[in-house]
Length: 171
Image (cartoon, rainbow, N blue to C red; front, side):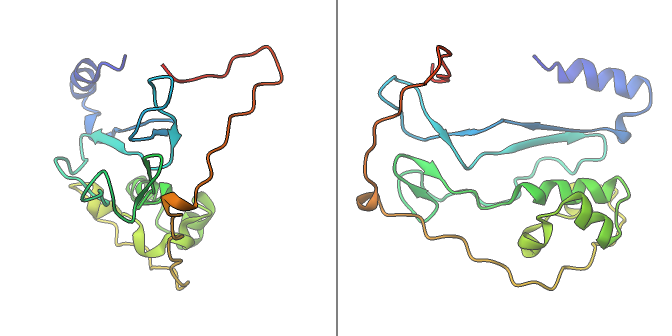
């Protein structure tokens, strides 16, 4: 278990808290609805939690569905389509670390140009953001795929594992 209070106290005691950024991420998201095993299945949309001495806190950035039972970002069986790319957060963090050259950012985040209009910059994430935002790449922004309608889905049965290893992750 991550003990953020003790860690924060120690970093402040060492006068390094303003040099710290902590990003907490789930390795995968979960469906909104349960499965037959009274658990939930892997899904797509998730969230991040970021903290640190210079982090601009107490804000939610990105998009959140207006309703959890319908809408264009949710389809059966309770899968939420991500509205913010993985690269968005890391773009701003990289700038805070001093990586501001467009070529360097593109090398660090190779999918960055696919989401040019949806990237966070240092000034959005940090209170001391002073780095000018790197120029926005001049590539067309792709549109999100249209999620299938619930009637278009065909239920399938899971294929049993071919080895003796049980890979079930449902509670």
